[in-house]
Image (cartoon, rainbow, N blue to C red; front, side, top):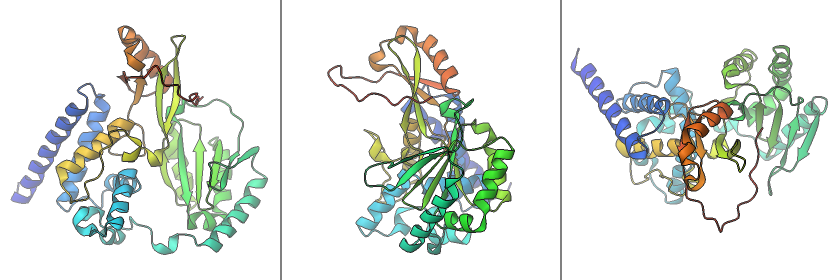
Length: 354
């Protein structure tokens, strides 16, 4: 083993120790699957810090999804706001110039202008007209868009195991004009993989929802790839499980994928330290956010585990029983959580997820 290889091994071993230490500080009962994924991303980062790994498809996927996360987007906003030098704030492997060389950053020409968004909106209206079963306008205040339901609700995967893909910006317009979106939709139907719903908002972001299990996502991706339709994902929204008044369990929405690692959504969120890049602090903050959202650190668009929320520990004596129920409902490893709940606070009715 030459000195460079020896240094790589030492760096990876140190990263694994750091990952285990960080997880133990978060929760010593963290699911083993999360520990495994955290160790994997620690090796990714150690490799990248040593100037390697950018040609590894797994590391490329990690970088692309990390760059789109709230953890990095918030930091980029702070860098611009305070006129900081991104070359000193971010590691070399997150620098735009380097990632452009590896095709991991979209060029400015990929983003739609105002006129192009209008054209995309009109073409999408024409395209979806004959395919949708129903639609609901107005997604959120101030946003333009709507949900289009494409299939009847039939047999679905458990909500935490469902997934979605994104087609964005110029890829929407190009796929409508070339027929790629039509081809993909037709072939998905032929393979019994039709999306349940599509959501178009701001005319430049098309979210395609699949009620099938995440295990078939690879088959869906293959159809997109064979038809030359670029996409982002697959991704999963955050889900939690709550114990109901009748001693059952209920799956609830915990937030969208794109906001899952936004420090602002967490009461004690660990923000990116814009004073400069420190590998250990970076890993600690990143794993903290992934852990709070139950996200897979190595593939942050995907779920690692799901929380079972037992407010005030009211059912802690029956914890094991409810964990088993939650595992059945969620289809993922469960981490029991007993958050303090103010009995004087009246929350809005939970959004039920089938």
